[in-house]
Image (cartoon, rainbow, N blue to C red):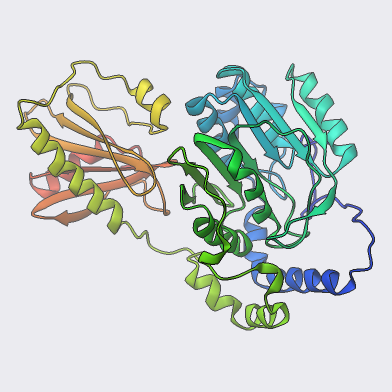
Length: 430
């Protein structure tokens, strides 16, 4: 079978190596039972795979037939994760992409590479028969992929569970796609993917699927400590969440376990599992996984700061302005998708605005009535409304909303009702 076929809730069955390490196997089983007890809401949420309209739009963007991916959900990547792959391939134009866990993401990544730079996809999966079928499936779509069988026979010194037997990796990797092994091997097993992070090229990107699950949350927390030169951000624009890591400098630090003072292999696992089972619902609430009102304070503060910087820039004669505004160039370079402005609105200034995770876009615009406004655009971090909401900062009104994976804020000194009216002219669901 391939990712074209309808699949069940659980991952494909696999044959794990038989060894004499009975305590380790019992410990891994305890982790699975414990995380299964608290993780079932995320597993159920993953069944849909995303809206059919979004899937059709993605396939249209890649010029693929609508039946290329007739079934998503379950253990497959959802539309949100697949769109992140396309966006990063278009932005990075990577020479080498490494994928852990083949399937729907293989088709999407390979086609995106074919359209944007013609880089090479190196894909690894633990199921030999699935690898052979997927290779033929990709050939049927005229896609050439280096896809290999990598059984789960290796162990990581830093992470629990069995890991891929990977060979012949590129010396430098521009994009790492992590969609395996499944959590049924061990809830923290995907943490071992950081064995590839030292090969990540400058400005390279890591994408982790299922990032909203408790196990992947713990993995992300430790990655942030071990790899301080990579900025990790959880994106909640799909059914399962995507962790996006962007390397921000050219150094290659060695992972430092002393920073967190822990080694997952030497945790008191029985005690940890007992704590997870008894406090699971509380932990889920603290992780922010239940639907909550958007916490947009940091985004609003950044939008307000960008407006102040834009006004200051415009008042300085030494600042160079350009009469050319190309939204496609901005999207290609930054991954930021700017909204279509109403007829007659004039862009007077566009700047990259640094944020803790990645650059945002700050624009100064003027309406046909001569009203000066600021439009701030960044990647969405928390679920929010498509209809504009209002906030106040330093005597100014800020209308903010989301569209897909993007968050926008329109700010100005006008009457609050006027600012909301102008925002409604941009926001799609106003």
